[in-house]
Length: 334
Ligand code: ADP
Image (tube, rainbow, N blue to C red; front, side, top):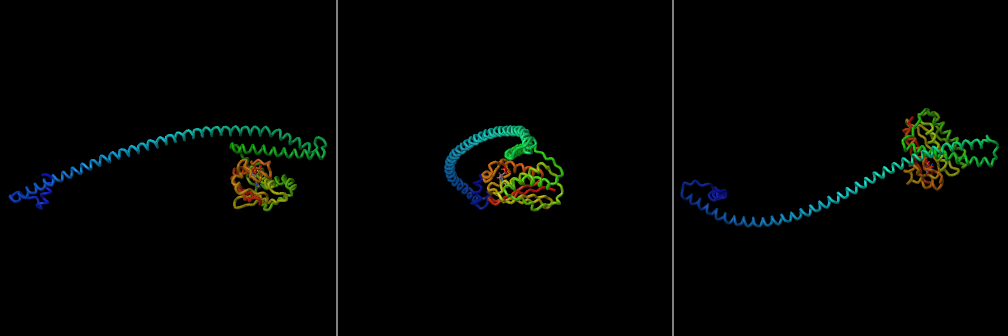
């Protein structure tokens, strides 16, 4: 039996009738007739609403379709844009790789050139040094005082050239990773005294006094590269004197802090501008006030010093204030 009819019969009669009595059959038939009468109306209503819904559905479908088209177009456009971007990026990265390789090659050639030039310069400079020394010491005949002054100036200039050539060679070796240490047991205090002995005459000419404030005479020998450490003391002490004003004072300290040896050199000179302190250990860097005061520097010394200290497992740092002087510190393990 039709489900709707069965439901209607149950609703009308309260239960499904037994078909024993005519009156019940009558009621049953009545229910059947009512059901079909309503069913007809329902069907019409249903078909109208179905008709409307299907129109709406078609409309919605069309709308969906066109929106889908728009979205798909947007996706296609964006994909194309991304592809182009990716192509450009790929191209750029290729060019960058090429440029990098070119720069590396140039850098290698520059290092090679510097190394050859420095080595070629070293021999004649040593020859000139030897000849000037002989002349100054009257070993090839008497020299007048006037001539001696000129010879000594030439000697100093030659010494500066030798220093520059050596610094160029060292910086080059650091960059190439061939800067090696020869570690031996060394009395560091002797190295400092040696450097002081050398720089005292030029410092006293400018009335600069150098004081050894804290001097730990009980310091045991340290395992370091004496030649390289000597270059460190020489650079720091020469800088302190060079960037001091005439009549200035320099104080040195060598002490033990915990398990480490700490060296410091303080001057009251031109100092380093705060905004340039971070770059002070970079290759060829010179602060603007130093360039003004002494146009002859090369900005290689501190770069080499920092590398030497770090290769010894130490640390280097500074405190400075423009016009009020600088203190350079470094530590070494014992
Ligand atoms: P150079 O002295 O030949 O320029 P360095 O590498 O030794 O090269 O020093 C780098 C720079 O650090 C100097 O040009 C100067 O600006 C700064 N500097 C180093 N020591 C001092 C100092 N004691 N006082 C002031 N400035 C200093």
